[in-house]
Image 1 (tube, rainbow, N blue to C red):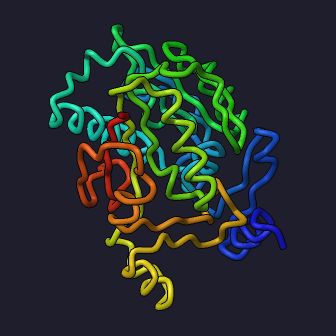
Image 2 (image 1 turned 30 degrees about the vertical axis):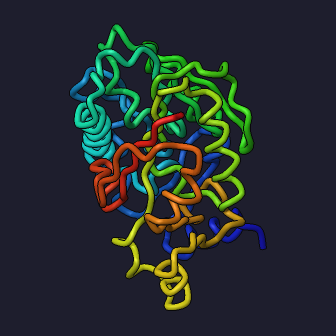
Length: 271
């Protein structure tokens, strides 16, 4: 059974029946889910921007909870701004930024009004990108494939952030993508990424926990790469010595990713 097939089976076992997600037409949710969240899709949020339909929220986050979508997006954006400021980088002087793995704009939407910053987003799912293009016109969005390269020029960005992206990739894909992000970030620019660190140890099996504590990357359900069923767990030493090889680790905050609770936050500087 493929990784995606296993993912669908898990959805069924948990009482979720997703209809035509790939066609982008809708979803049937557990009893009560649509009633609590479905009426939001046609409304605007407090920022005046549209809220994605519930099937897109569910596809990205495994929940159609609009309050969580808006609150966590705001917290994620604030984490980015605070991290830059803490490291002597004036956020308003960031000329170009890429939201890598933008989904349906959970964090991207909060760049609205930053006139001095050119905002870009990229995601492998064309349905998500199409929604962003239609409803977040202040930014430019592109579809990427599951493998590099990105449709951007070398050194195009001052900042790239990847929130809960490397957390869902197997090791070879992580190596390929961090090299590609180095290509599109200018020398001296920054990559902000989040990882599953020590706070996630209780979720691991005994063998996986032992491997993690020995400094090894642990990846569960590798075949489901890019989905919420593939999960990668990063020891700090692994990030510093392996994943971030060739980068300068400018900052590390355990469980510092406010918009992705309990995930660790790294700020890497491109040499």
